[in-house]
Amino acid sequence: MEHQQNKLTREFLMEVQHRLPAGRRLVQEAFTTDHRRPVLVRLTQLNGETFYLFNEITAHAFSDAVVEVAARHGGTQLTLSYQFFGEFQAQQRRLQRIAQKLEGICVLAVGQLRTPSELASRVEFRNIEGNPLTRYRIALSEGSPALAFVCRELPQSKSSDNPRSLGFFTVDPDTVDDLADDIEQVVRGVGFRLDTFQKLELLHETTQRVARELDSYSRRMELAIQRARRRPDLLTPQRFDRIVSQAIAKMEQLKEIPRRALRSINHSAR
Image 1 (spheres, rainbow, N blue to C red):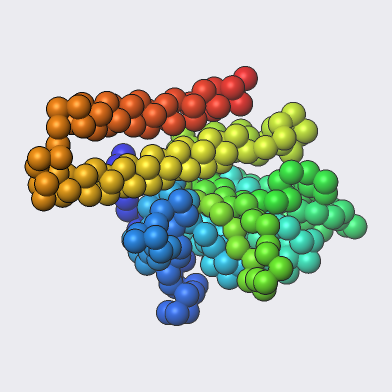
Image 2 (image 1 turned 180 degrees about the vertical axis):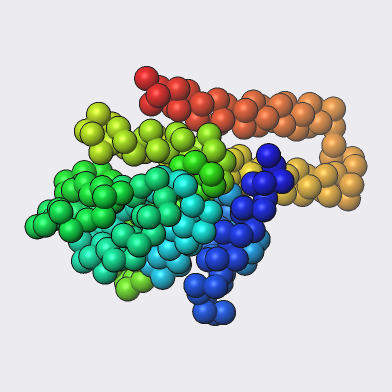
């Protein structure tokens, strides 16, 4: 199972890479910093279910790669979202050709079809105008291969003319199934958000916060040890006890961060 997922990940990332010029094959990892600077990762080194920041061109490449890989394997059910009706229209003929190789394609887009009869028999169109899904770009393949790319647009600052999105890809069948269930509920108006996306996002934020706290505290402890070595006469039993007590208290604080995150996840799942 793991070998198959690794093979699919390599195939998918190579497909993405083929769709991007050489100068755009780096993606910034979200929630991670190295020496207080953003970490840029090569496409071929990306990990599934890890959050990255995508510009518009890269997000398009990831979505198109899901379609291409699904069409290559055949027999899957595709779900695709388009934030603009014109974007769907530009892809309509291509999707109708691909649909013949698949179980079907569900298109989510803002707008109304004037002539629904023009759609191929295996292409379903759903208008998501006013739906929370309009904030997301979704490309999801259910079946074999199980593959999904989901990203959510971020608020654009006034100084930026390059909008970015936060998201991830996955080849894990369980995660793909959970995402498909979330999408169906939101489309039907039963749900109001992609719970799986938000839970993973919260876990990544929590992991990064713990890592930052640990890094900061480790630096403070190293400085305290260096001072004690230079002036051992200052390390009295009382001072030593205070340092140990502070360390124990800090560890308890760090353990409480993921506990709060888990409580938040359990509360949102109700």
